[in-house]
Length: 283
Ligand code: ZN
Image (cartoon, rainbow, N blue to C red; front, top):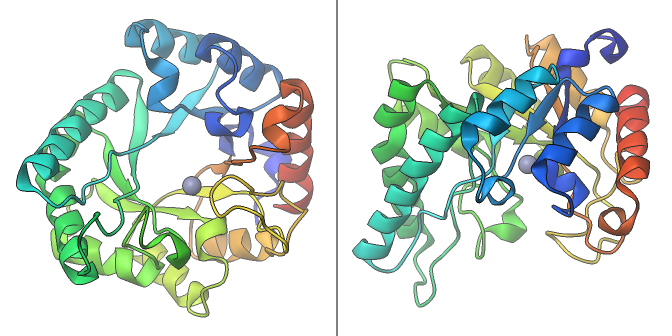
């Protein structure tokens, strides 16, 4: 396994970890100052900005961009809404390219209001991803499907396991032409009894586009905004990175913590210090 102390380029910060409190310029500067080598901005961070300026600042601070977060949901009751989502995601792919992001992170959406057919919602999501693949390839941004914990199947994502996301990749990209893969988030997949097989398959197929870390608090209070700092919960993060690297993964290890009542209300420098020390010590 890599000693991350010698791999600054692999130490990545997802800007959601700081709770979107400061302007992106300040977050970029702090990210670099704390020793990270990569950053994953959200669309909301870039509102009102010239993307070329943001891209230049990221480069000047010696950072790369892992993933751009994240897609508008593809699943909707009406065709018009589904098409609007595809159009919006196409614009986001262009933004991702403009800031030099390696991938665009897809959270595909849950079961739409008024619907009771999860299979149909899944087909909507597959169709939506498929509609964007050519554009993503053209601009050189890979589409990273992020499987979400099954408790999020109704509200946020109908793709819930590594195996399922890999099946979608196979269906959409049977020749493995690239530009399509997975964002593996430890928070969403740690519980899966088939985790080891899923990681092995994903790496073998060249589908792992990134790896997110945080921790699952035993007494979690909110399934979206109560993630723990690495080392404070139940996930064996070192084992999961070990599985990824044993299967050939050499990409970033990205901290992504949504924490409305804890880390988002602590001083940013304190949060970044914790992130860095836990990345090095427990991930
Ligand atoms: Zn994630």
